[in-house]
Image (cartoon, rainbow, N blue to C red; front, top):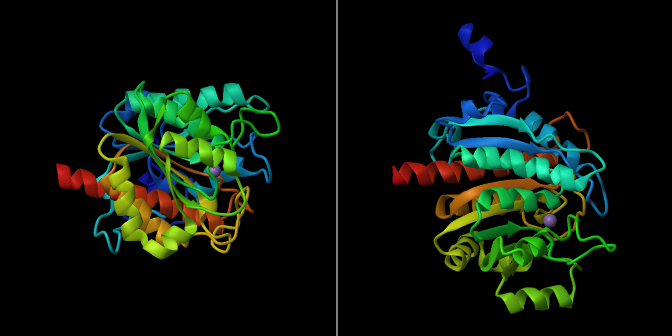
Length: 322
Ligand SMILES: [Mn+2]
């Protein structure tokens, strides 16, 4: 294990945010499965954006989120430091293949499966939203799982431009293959002008539930979380967060920005409360398209805090149960 804090600790200090290697939160970095023993959560990058429809660049997401990520610290409202409550490592990036979405997805699925097989919770940094298909496949372990999905869009098209593989189709594919249980699938934050009647009719037929961005504003976060937990119920569940669910005023760096979105105050709290209430088998944060790949980009900054709220919720849950 490579410990980016080691040199500072040896000098009786601690690493300043801007110095050292940008692993996630300055956490120990490893690519060895053996090092996952005793670990609670592994951060995995999926730097892949070749199934994007509109603006490309989410391949730089994992690097930008790492660069923007805070070191450890106690959460002011949750009163827990997730990086102290949980043992977390940075497991590096999936060895994605340019030009070849099938092989890239296989590489992502294989790496996430290594984490799952070690009994560790994976949190994956995207990447375009197509990566959620290999992510959930690896985390589901052969049984249908629940899905909580923050997004502007449903991503339930059967095809886009004649292609079944796209960042607009992963949720259709996961339900169609029996990997996500439609009765335990909730979408939150929908708005805008896509998809159309056909896709909504399909998902209503299957019992997939959704709350629009307007619903979030009208109901408030606590009620949205209550309804979501009620719909999902007990059982293994994956959490996927497309940062385009946020208003582009807060997260302009994303593939398909749509005005009228959630605020970070709403999304961050929802991520923490849901992660504390759900039986999470994995989570991802996708469609972070930094304007400047190596800086603390605005969108990467909020993406790091999404991950931190998920970890805080998981930390609260583990503390309560053990
Ligand atoms: Mn999406």
